[in-house]
Amino acid sequence: MKKARFIITASMVALMGLSAFTFSSCTKDDQECAVGLEGKNCDQQVRTKYYNTYRGNGTDNQGNTYTNWAMDFSQEGTDATKMRMRLLDDADDPVISAVVTLQTNTTFTVNQFTNNQGLTYSGNGSIDENTASLTLREEGSGDIVTYTFSNMNR
Image (tube, rainbow, N blue to C red; front, side, top):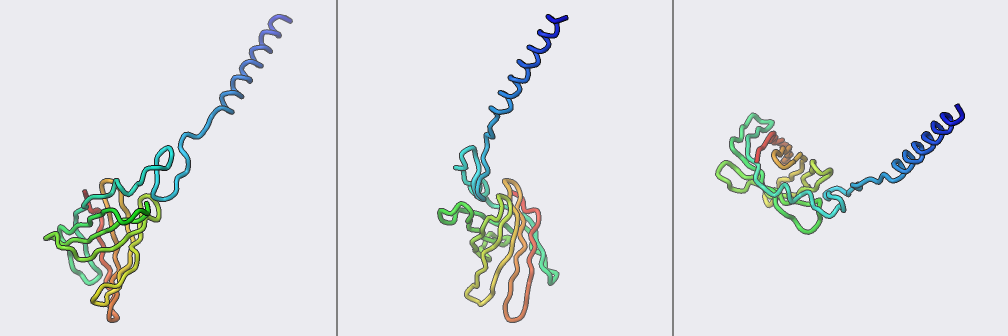
């Protein structure tokens, strides 16, 4: 009986020691990265995955439809949260060009700007490697037009 109790006690101590070693030796492989960065060492820019053209349809709050329009994303400076977005019509002519800022690794805001016709633009959207969406607000001369482009595909 003493021998069995000794074996059971020794087994439990060994098991507890192994468990303590296992739990204390666990480390988190991936660290929390700043917006715009990813990877084990947070040294990869997320935005490079989005440099492409996304095509689809849109509407505005005045009942107009925009068929086969596109959003084209490219590099803008060295800040990992910034991209250049061009909104292209169905003939691939640029309608606007704006700087967008990643708010998370998959959402962005359009940095407000005013074009040479006095129209002010702002907005937001989402993006991943396959799809993008955009809600763009245009203000000028008392009019506000909201453009919505959902499910634009690469």
